[in-house]
Structure formats: structure tokens, C-alpha cells
Image (cartoon, rainbow, N blue to C red; front, side):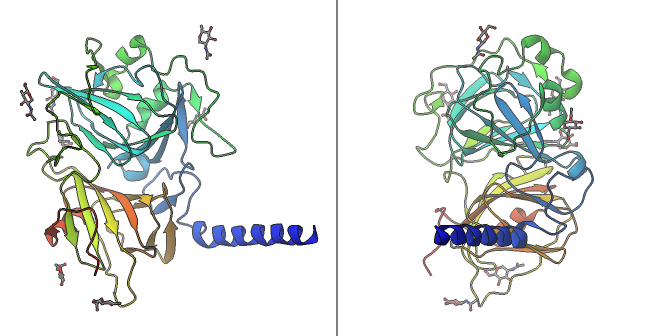
Length: 366
Ligand SMILES: *[C@@H]1O[C@H](CO)[C@@H](O)[C@H](O)[C@H]1NC(C)=O
Ligand SMILES: *[C@@H]1O[C@H](CO)[C@@H](O)[C@H](O)[C@H]1NC(C)=O
Ligand SMILES: *[C@@H]1O[C@H](CO)[C@@H](O)[C@H](O)[C@H]1NC(C)=O
Ligand SMILES: *[C@@H]1O[C@H](CO)[C@@H](O)[C@H](O)[C@H]1NC(C)=O
Ligand SMILES: *[C@@H]1O[C@H](CO)[C@@H](O)[C@H](O)[C@H]1NC(C)=O
Ligand SMILES: *[C@@H]1O[C@H](CO)[C@@H](O)[C@H](O)[C@H]1NC(C)=O
Ligand SMILES: *[C@@H]1O[C@H](CO)[C@@H](O)[C@H](O)[C@H]1NC(C)=O
């Protein structure tokens, strides 16, 4: 008994120390700032709101990024109905990515309706004026959204029944009613001032086979190439898109989802997978004109910024304002991050410019 008690004290002490060293200091915040500054925020800490059974959180907002982009995550159980009624945006470019679990995404542009079932690591691009809708499929699904320009969270607060809070950091409320997951047609039709245009005639196709329709779609059956324009919707299955191997500061595999070409120069979005920092490597300083954010997908990302050593785990986000000098690396064997950069000259573009085209998501053995 005495032993158990002292063990409990030891565990409590150790946990407290670990949190103090990794999640304290002025850069770690509990609330997303309302102005541009460097910050890091833990998974499930960002404020958010309730839309039916879906919980929307916003680790990067219009105010925190000077409207460069919004980074959001939506947690929800599977549903029998669409998560939102079909609609378009005229000004906002939307990107959806599965952090975990499955959701189905439909897009239509110029009469070509496509659908894919996205699971962990899969990506879908929704340029301006593309009709889209989605449906949550798995019991514990987390969908990441990147919307450019920023400020798009205003829409979800307008649709919501209230702000979300959970003393247990629950991703969503498992007891929430399954009724009214999706805002009604009347509500969706009244949202044009928030850049939402209802497309209530859109009929989502139900003929997906192996997670895709039309039948000739390439979905886990071959490479997904990115379009050479900024208006065609497209999908990239995990590890089936373009890949580049960089040897700067160890190995990094860069997989772009959005390039300066596909965003009209407005932003870029890539995953970067990196090996463990080797003791004989000197990590270089980074600094870019545009604002940027990393979200950790796997492993642990270390970021040196503003005199602090930040240690980020899965789902944690660090926001790096333009012209901030920082370093980043992994102290564990495999770290994968999602990187969002404002403009056409972010870290991913710089790494790709000096990398070689590579046909594996994995780096060489030596
Ligand atoms: C989107 O549609 C609107 C309304 O038709 C049009 O004014 C705008 O130019 C379109 N934007 C793009 C990027 O195609
Ligand atoms: C909900 O959160 C938003 C964004 O932080 C905030 O502006 C708003 O005041 C909050 N609403 C309530 C009722 O607390
Ligand atoms: C859904 O709404 C119906 C009718 O309003 C109600 O009878 C039912 O209990 C609700 N279901 C849930 C799970 O709350
Ligand atoms: C798939 O088939 C349709 C019509 O059958 C065609 O218009 C389209 O270009 C095809 N797509 C691909 C990727 O081959
Ligand atoms: C890029 O940004 C400009 C200026 O805001 C906008 O007019 C244009 O539609 C955007 N293009 C894309 C593809 O997002
Ligand atoms: C660093 O050390 C490893 C072996 O530990 C070696 O394979 C590698 O070539 C070294 N890299 C540099 C840049 O010296
Ligand atoms: C490009 O990569 C090589 C190693 O592959 C490195 O020596 C060189 O410094 C890099 N150049 C730039 C501009 O980063």
C-alpha cells in the first residue's frame, strides 16, 4: 500500500515535470491569440463550436494569422446524413485532410462530379466555385481543414448552437443528439455574406466503388498527379502524390498537396516526414516572408523559436509569423507534419527546389 502511494506520487511528479518543460513558456498558449504572434497550442486546446454532432476547433484563425489562413479540425462520429448541405465558396479555397477516421467528400466543377472516401492521410482540394459536401463515416473521425484566406471560422460560429467546452478534452460529445447534424437549407441559403452559396440541386453520387467514383478514378490504384491550374478540384491518396527527397539537416520527404501553381501563388500545403536528427548535423535557421503553421501528424517535432524549445506531439500546432527565425527537427525516429505556408515561397517550396524527385514516402537506409 505504502509502495503504491509513493509510486502514485512519483508518477504525478514526473508528469508535472514533463508538462512544465514541454508545454510552458510564453509561446505555449491555452487560447488562440487574437493578434499575430508566435504561439504553440496543444491538440484539443483551441476554442471551437458545436454544429450538430460536429465539433469545430480553430488552432489558427483569421485574427491569429492576419487572415493568411484558417486551420481547423472537425471531430464527429459517423452519420447517416451529409455533414453540410452542398454549397460553393466564391472567395475561399478549401482543403480537407483526414487526420484519422473516414469521411466521404464530393466535389463538382464544370459538370464533373467526383467523390472519394478519405481515410487517414488522404487529401482533397476544393478551389473556389467548386460545389462540395461531405459525410462523416467512422465513429472517431477528425477532419483537418485549411481555408485560404483566413477568417472562415466566422461561418461555423454563425452556424453553431454554442461554443464547445469539455473538462476532459473530449474530441466531441458522444451523447449529442444525432438530429440536425447539418444546418437546414434555410440557414445555408442565408449565408452568402459569409461566402457560402447553397447548391441545393446538387445530388451526391452514390456509386463509389473502392472509395471512388467515377469508375475510372485513380484512387490507390496509381499515382495522383496535381493539376496544372488553380481551379480543378483534386484528390491525393496518402503517399500516392508527388514526393521529393531533401538531404538538408538529415532526410526529409516532402509531399506537396498544394503548390504555388495549384493555389495561384496564394499558399502551399505539404506533409514533411523527417528522420531523427543526427548528432553530426548542424540545423540551419529558417525564416520566410509569409506566415506558416505546422501540425504534427506523427512522432514529435522540436521547434526552436523566440529562445524557447518547443516539443510538439500529435495534433499540436505551432504558428510561425513571417520573418520569424526558427529551427525545426525531430528527436525521434519518424516525425511527420502538415505544413501550411502563406504565399508561394514557404519552407516546402524551398526544400523542393533543392530536393530530388523520389518515389517512396520513406527515406534511404543510410
Ligand atoms: C466564382 O463565381 C463567381 C460568380 O459566378 C465569379 O464572379 C468569380 O469570378 C468566380 N471565381 C473564380 C475563381 O472562378
Ligand atoms: C465563442 O467563441 C468565440 C471565439 O472565441 C467568441 O468570439 C465568442 O464570444 C464566444 N461565445 C460565447 C457565447 O462565449
Ligand atoms: C430526434 O428528434 C425526434 C423528433 O424531434 C425525437 O423524437 C428524437 O428523440 C430525437 N433523437 C435523438 C437521438 O435525440
Ligand atoms: C473518365 O471517364 C469520363 C467519361 O467516361 C471521361 O470524361 C474522363 O476524362 C475519364 N477520366 C479519366 C481520369 O480517365
Ligand atoms: C489568390 O488570391 C487572389 C487575391 O486574393 C484571389 O483573387 C485569387 O482568386 C486567389 N486564387 C486562388 C486560386 O486562391
Ligand atoms: C553523420 O554520421 C553518420 C553515421 O553516424 C554518417 O553516416 C553520416 O554520413 C554523417 N553525416 C555527415 C554530414 O557527416
Ligand atoms: C542543396 O542541397 C545540398 C545537399 O544535397 C547542400 O549541400 C546545399 O547547401 C543545398 N543548397 C541550398 C541552396 O540549400
